[in-house]
Image 1 (cartoon, helix red, strand yellow):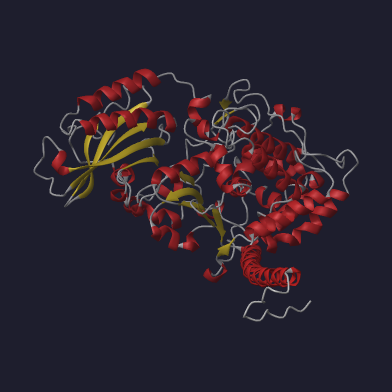
Image 2: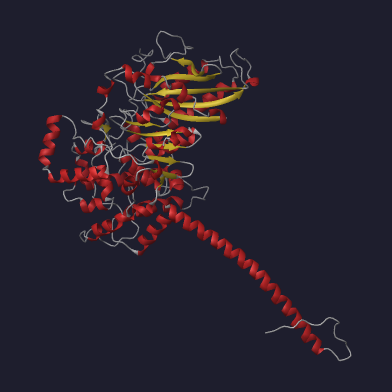
Length: 620
């Protein structure tokens, strides 16, 4: 059943919804404008079946532990012509005794409610800024029956946001790559590669505001992804609807069409692709009307005992291959380089966007954003516990999701990687995947370049984050160039040498992903202006050895243990040295005092008697 005003309302905001916690019914919708159901009133608790998780998303799990919080979430479309619905919710709680009008169903000491906006456009930060002010005013009324302010909010948002462009800084309001790099440092590049490989990535931290901020900031590093690449990122059905709708599987690609493949499968498929003529591949795509399918055999499940922190020391096996690949390049690629100054490409609006023939997304002239969040690959900035089944749903081939409930973290086998935001740690389950994600020397140079520029002058209260170099837009420009260079390298006929700097195992796995196949199926003439090769390619130096050693020590479990042991030993040595110094110093002081007394005694007249106590014997 379609909500009221779906056809006649053309503004970016679909609904303003208030969700409260009932002591008997739990989370429920208390108000919606316009009504979520066309035949119901504003105070109806009924919801469309596709949006049955809305109350649990708007009022997050564990919200009672915080006075206020903010949630970003995605809802599936209600009709075929709709796209992803973007939700922003502001949560607050107030003491019940402070209310001017206390309703009969208020039986607890505190009242918990969320005011949320359901929008057609992904303006998360902008919607959050407006919604926080209205939520504060709504609670200050201390009378939740006063809903006129919410209706005014709906009219105001549709009036002010109508016709707003998705280009520019307003899309990234509140998303700071600078803070992300200060926290994760070089691991940001590992997160970037994880999403390129379309893996199952789970972000975990509390509160929700920190969670969704980190997740969406990582996505903002992909050019055009937030603006145009999330429209198909929430195509799922509630658990009860899967068995009831026999045509559901037809709306998604078949499960065996989008599966994870092991590294052995990836390399085997890569060799077959290289041996097959390019013309036959193109003709196969044209005849079938869709992209080539990867092998339907899934990768072996890793045992839970293999679950451990990403350890770069086990990834060093690929080092000699990278070295050999680099040393065999021609002289133009082996020029000795100092840290390279990466210049950004022109702004994101290069000639506007057009509808992609295969991806269906709004693409720029470089074919970006990549079709990552399509065909069952979900983006769920926040997942409620009631959505847990999506992690193992056969119609879901992957996800980038956020969770605050410990049960998500404990179900380790359902994710390829868990990002512990608070600790700045990435946990990888599969040893093969950790090898794929090993950062090459060129990658380490790139990451170190970012970290150094971001950390410069960060303590300056006047200049922090305001300059171009090291600023948020500058960081996004660097990742744009990184992705452009990777795509340009993949287009070259003899690209093994060029792609070696990105990691041979990584590029082999990336070439069989859905996003790469979709991008490769179209021509992108603007790519001719992009220089192929890694932005930080070049010969190895002593600085690279130091960088690799520092990376391994800081991020491997073995290196951390050695580092902690060295710190402990150093402290012990310092403390022992102080103790010994005090002991030896005391003895020397006593000896010096005795010698002074003895010499002074010798210099005195004979009439003066020596002290009664014998002088201590001092041996040289």
